Image (cartoon, rainbow, N blue to C red; front, side, top):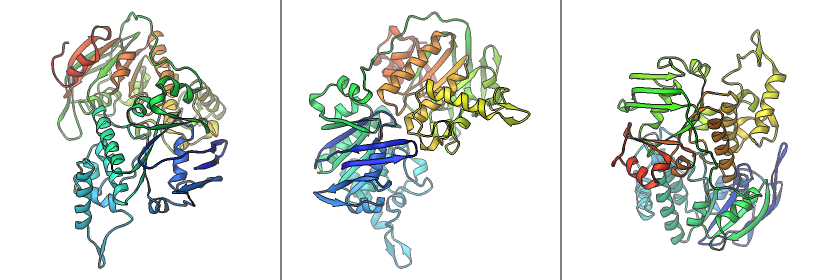
Length: 499
């Protein structure tokens, strides 16, 4: 790609960027959230038309006006948010758009057989007859990979592929990528996770705020150097915090039992306390009851038995609204499903939970100047990159900027209890450092923070105490300084533990 330029209203997403990809290599595309990485790859995949610039495939200049044309040129893309039909089978999703015909109907048997062969060949272990709604997120990603392989793709673009995966699924994905490279495929990996770049990439091209910073050989460049290229300054990889003195009780969970969506007990006899001035990290392998626990605490699901108290008041059977009024705030696991109304502007998203507040409305009418001032303050305080400022639709922000918007909104409520679930999922090192600092600020100002994360680095970096959940039960509660990652990892697997 040569001298690629792309502008959107109020923002230059790509400013004369050039990248090259060789056969059989992994090229990492590194940049902060909103740097222009996904836009550049959307141009290569035919989703956007560049304002100017050239694309050459095997030395020949091509024009790519649609994903179909990209596929014909051997270019495929796995998007950060998968493009799958949930009530279709895996086979139906893979052949969508190129369905094999027999007379007036479809013949899926031969496709299913080929998908099974491809799955075995690349070590994907996919069941062609399973429905998308019944498989894990990691398996859905494999379906997206198979979609490309089924279309004989040679260049595979992965957009933030590990943002929604568990540590084990990330390891599996790395093996799959190595298999693809061994087969002569080429990969462009859009990411901001330096550890993954070191593990898999050959070269790394860095983009900052739409401009090309440079391309480096991964083996010869340290993660610190790459982080500095990405952010434009030195990045601290450790969280600086003073020793804490926890205050009075804010959140009390007593013998909580919660049934999950499959009708099975997801949280079992769970008891925990979180105090003012502490960050309590909840560690566990994904799917061990964290989601059910958080939904019970925030009022999103029914509690079978047990009690939840915020500031001494029983909120077990109260509404989400009442819990917010009691001083609760929630950074949700899924920013698009639970955090934002994607078609609303930023300023409307920022008052979702307090639009009835006298600051923002009077006699049922919204006070637009106050709403805008509130929005601009959050945008500035939390460095939310939004091309049209307060009026930017949430949908048009990069994933990381959506996350910063949610964190900004929740902290701006000045809560007593901040339930923070995967707060840095899909964020670059600069944004991670920034949000970690804001969470520590909350703790230092006397708030109680419950941090739920799949990243053990994050749990250890931020937490004062660590609670470990396994199969819905509390299996360990320890001081963060008294254990190492290995001990917590064993507890997460259900081995050992102390309460």
